[in-house]
Image (cartoon, rainbow, N blue to C red; front, side, top):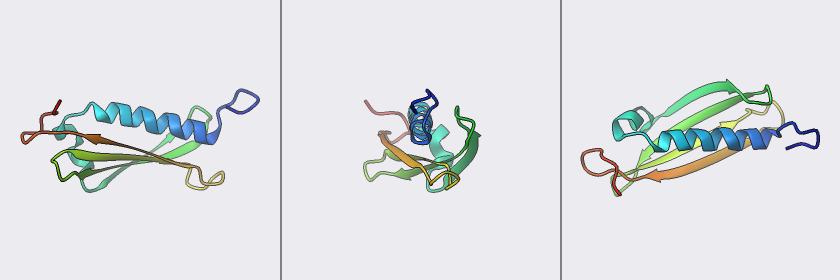
Length: 99
């Protein structure tokens, strides 16, 4: 947070990335399929009133799970703040989440 209690660009980007990753991590293999091997993109306004560009990409892991990457960037509007958060989502042979 900035000294005037307004969120910093990086703080907003981190909050967005972690929220996206948290929601996506709960998805099934079928729900996450559109992210596999290609990027899904979205532009949204952060709580600071600035636009942030979100890119979500999934890559199949050798063990059958999914590497999920969320990148949030202000695309250089204010010094190019970029944040990446990643998770490994374990799925079994039939797309069911493994314990």
